[in-house]
Length: 193
Image 1 (cartoon, helix red, strand yellow):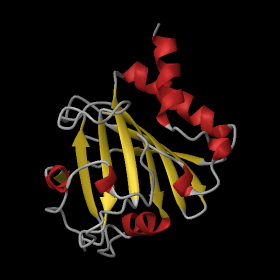
Image 2: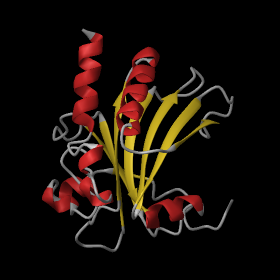
Image 3: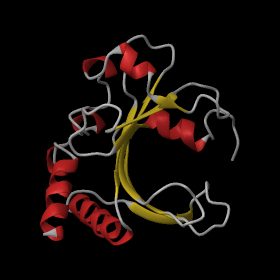
Image 4: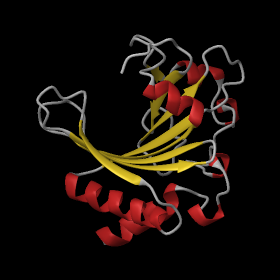
């Protein structure tokens, strides 16, 4: 039963299969793509109620906003979603999008491997393992599989969180434009390394 559920989740994670995708805008999460307007899916009032990271140090080139299935029951596959858009953009154009699934550790491991293996059929990437920066104990681990695509990247992440933090294990698929990737590498426009 669990294997069947994982297979259904993997098949539904991206509506466009990797072999059909020609550029970063061809991939979809919950039917949304890079270059779409959030206004096609949410009202301005809903977007303003998203959680954001405006209080963290950043040059605010992009706003990082998150929402959950509990707040807005518009998600079919994911438990939460993250969007990157430019704060001054009245059209709320999506520059990066991610979907998160919360799961128990063994389920997360299997799901991460399934998603990664699905992409390996068409794309080569690199895998890296890091201590999660939000766990000062160093016991939470993030595994990231990165696929570079024309005009951006796809990340498949598995966060194995320790009991020292309030966050839970999750698997995420993130799609972003190169401009967002560079902004993140440059520590949110602050030039920190």
